[in-house]
Amino acid sequence: MTGKFIVFDGLDGTGKTTFIKMLSEYLESKGFKVSVTAEPTKGPSGVLIREILGGAKKASQEELAALFLADRIAHNSELDELINEGNIILCDRYYYSSFAYQADSDTMGWIMDMNLNCPKIRVPDLALLFDSPPELCLERINKGRMGQPLEIFENLKSLNAIREKFALIEKILNESGRNENIVRIDSAPKLEVVFEEILKAVNSLLGI
Ligand code: TYD
Image (cartoon, rainbow, N blue to C red; front, side, top):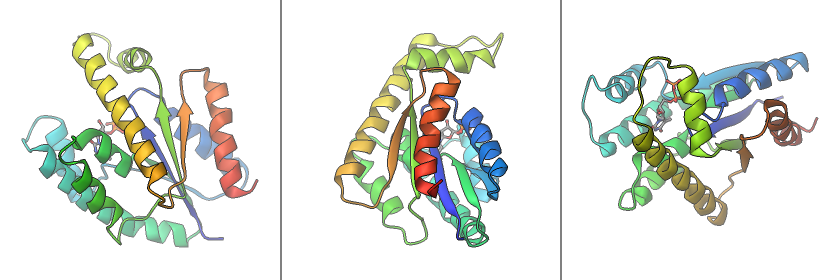
């Protein structure tokens, strides 16, 4: 069978990495070939992006959006191979993050167009958009960062803004008539409950 491309996107601190691991183990136990990928990638554009995100280099949001586009195009040639080999690809973040993190009201149209109209950028077979109250996200983010003080207010403010952007993107894409298969996952409940929701969407995609 040809593979499938499943994207995990959404706010930081919603547990995407944990759920990718759980789903990967589940699918392998069912006999599927699984491949886990992420954006930014480890390729040349991805390395530059990490330097910018880490503060070592400076760039505007427009430059970053273009770098993420280049990184995504490079990523897609790897995805093509993996799909042809029959892998179920679980990808940590995709163009939804570019819309939520790089775009503002002036640049949303341009950033969406260049990603959605690029013939080298595939549409996911399923996009799981993880959502949780920002307070809960912060709690989860902080767990792994003992001793590093966080500007709680600033972080809550920006998480809230990004959360609203994800909700807007979902609405725009659902109303656009495009062939997007977006499922919002409420990741506030217990792990097992959230995983059941993920399995419902994935099993329906894979017909199992
Ligand atoms: P993340 O999955 O949070 O990586 P890490 O494992 O290092 O925490 O992703 C890294 C960051 O990249 C995240 O803050 C969101 C950002 N990002 C964008 O701003 N635009 C994009 O298009 C993508 C794919 C990611």
